[in-house]
Length: 127
Image (cartoon, rainbow, N blue to C red; front, side):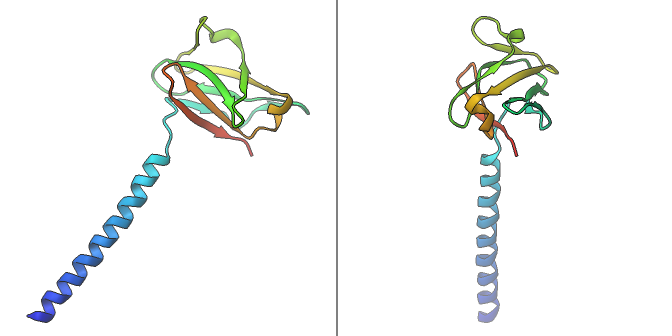
């Protein structure tokens, strides 16, 4: 009887350790996912020798309100003014907005977005 209890205790401890490890990995994975609110950076974009023209699509079901797009150096990325309403960009579902990255931004590798409510997240990365 003592051997059976020891084996059960060991198996329970191993199972608890495995559950903690997998739970930690799962929570870390969930926290690494950013909520882009349906915005998606198009991986294929136009460019010249000194400018990049990426596009961002609202693939979500809701209209998003955007304060600005910026690079990893916190430089504001210029956009077309088609969706500007005077205080923010209003991008309806299924619509694209064009970005212009020139000068030092041509060498930037990441694009971030700040929404009108202050939430910020990374949209994507160039290779």
